[in-house]
Amino acid sequence: MPHPKEKKRRLEKEEDAAVATEENDDNLTSTIDSLGTDVFAHIFGFLPPKDIMRARLNNKMRLAATITIVPVADFCVDSEVKYNGMAAMASALPNLQHISLRSLGWNRNIKYIDGEDPDEQRAARTVNWTAFDIGIISSFRRLRSLEIDEGAPLNGRYNFLFNFPLLKILRIEGSSFDSKLINLKCDLGMLSGVPMLEVFSCSDKLGDCLTGNINSLRVLKGTLEEVEIYDCHEIQGNFMDLADFPRLKELHFLEDTAVTGDIREIGEKDFLALEYLVLPDGVYGGKDYEFQNISDAADVAKAVYSIKKQRPSLLLEDWYGRLSSHSPDWYDDGFERAPLHICLVEAGSRLGYQWESVNNQSCEVIWLDPEPERESSDYEEYIEQLDHIEKRVYFRGFFEPPLEEELNHMSFYI
Image (cartoon, rainbow, N blue to C red; front, side, top):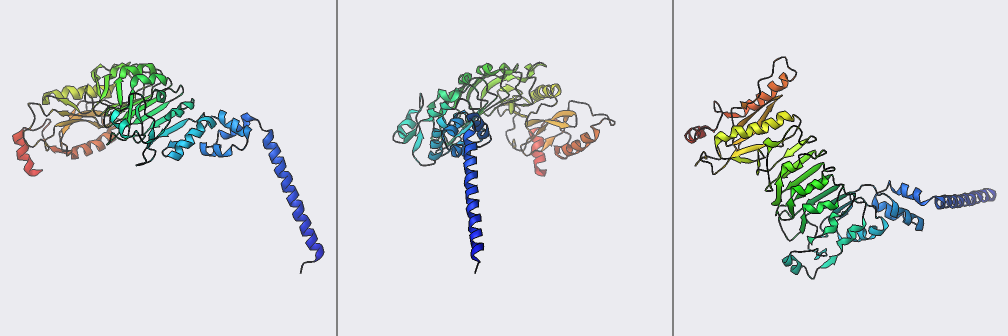
């Protein structure tokens, strides 16, 4: 049994420790209270949005949160709860820098309030759905990045989604398989409301989300670095309208855009910062460009070759051209086995092109550069890559597609 004096000493120590803890808490509270609003705002600047919202313990902290430059973090509005969170942050954290708009939940009968000029059928079908005000997003005036996913329940034109003075990144993914999911309407001319934009991306399998002429992008000449437009049937204009953009590094126009032009017009002073280029088949020399005769292939290949020689570091992703099915040179039979596509071939610093089939069975390479000298620095790399290219050659002795009769004879051995 403990001695009474020892028990008394232990109780006194515990009491002293409790008093010290209370004094420390009082000192900490006093220290926190002495911190200014700017100091709290600086501290909050290192926290994600959720933690900032939780840390607003008093009026001073709540005020600090309203002036905090919130770190770029992925705040995804993908449920009713997340929408309510965004609504709360509209006043509590107006300096939020990134927002992703996605589906608010499948089969929930909830949507955003219809915009201007909505799809009438969809509006009628969803008239009794619970509707949320997406206009609150306008409160985030320091927004740097906005992503709109195909599942976001939008219908119509929302001009305020394109009115952020500091926005640098805008990505829109239209519907990929069902127009019931999203019916956002926007025009390239609306991008004048985002004067600091550096990256613009829009993809829409149904093709009617984005409209306009790429000439409208000229208001962003001094800032644009990346442009990606896929599957947008209503986008028109000549890609050369962007040739003098000093910061443009990546340019992608693909899959059924109506963009036109001619790569032979690219001069040495055009697209000076360009590192990555993908052009649609409506452009002479674009990806999947169709030519009418086998004899036309050489001019098309040489046009692409001249761009590669002019810009050795320029990446032309998986470029190829192909013979039109309406060509008089088209095969009535066996076209699936025939080498009716042309692609660039690169071995070391040496460039050329060759015909190949959809099964990657190729004709001989038509080299447009001489073979590098044995003493050159890239000769070993050239030999290694040449060996790989030669292994893919099936149509030995043919530099162009064989005649249909020759192909039918060879097909027995394929």
